[in-house]
Length: 448
Image (cartoon, rainbow, N blue to C red):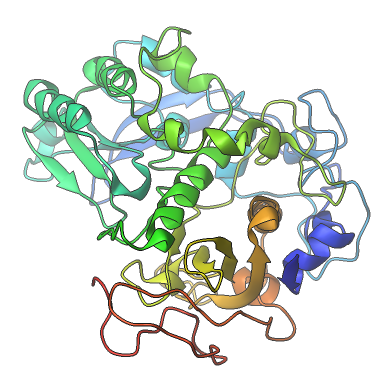
């Protein structure tokens, strides 16, 4: 049973698509799109000319050709909206909608002899776990010829088996800068890969049992847990297991990754974290439609639809007393709540809407601490997570104010359960106040 405002409505009958909009028929003037690649200082150094894409109405209107019967770009129900956005979309949303689920124009760009990819492909490539970069230490023509690519891995919980680390070490020496860089979200980045080597590097990572999709782009990013694991505390084990499950539940389902980097074949080795989450049957969980607007109706991407998310989406799972994940800066934060026996999982306290993202000189964007949503029992946890993601999918329109505050904050504080599990350092038995969640420790925390 879920205790909370917004997600309770999504699970119990109110349409999650109430937060979406319908685009009216409007047409952009047909014109070529010139894609400029710029250096760090903003200087254009290369360009490609591409044909103009379809208008937003053609992409986001009533047509269900691409499988989007209902969803954020084709709502199932009319609803009065607090914003107006009838004809235009942010440019990157159109690029994603026109990409055939993250394939075009990247597939064509990877087949040519250029050392860079087009502007539209840069957006698509992010969803495959890579950014195009330049060597900032160079100047002029040398800098223009220094295009290289960064790859960021998807490693849920920051868990990196020895075989994977050894492979990354070899790859960095053979095709990269000879180093690996740890990220703030418990992953590794590999720098200095040339376009001609990009396919070989991504294939090597996939075939050793890891991946790069989910490392970047407008999808769920690497899911974090406390970096120090205490095996004598069952709550830490549940945090890791459910974090891995969320990483798989929210992965993109398109075959673009396999088609572009593995020649249409499955990776030699299955992702190493899959063995820990087989019991959840997440393919069934992902496709389950409770009829309340959580599922988009898209044949390939039931959760994301044609254009995935408006921005990146970050999740962290932790235990009472351990805030080493900085829970309140995540889009979703989940705190494991145990039964009184300290061994059996009861459910999770949930916070939503946190983030550190801010656009320079854009006053409507700002950092925000997550809001308390409520407690969800373990049997409803995945459906709750899907409902929150559905709200994020519905944020694809342009809001007049910061959407997290308007959409993700329930009208009244949702009841959270007091943490009752014993942490590695202290037991917290207090009911959280309005400004705190059950990450409190009576003295010190387990890991910082």
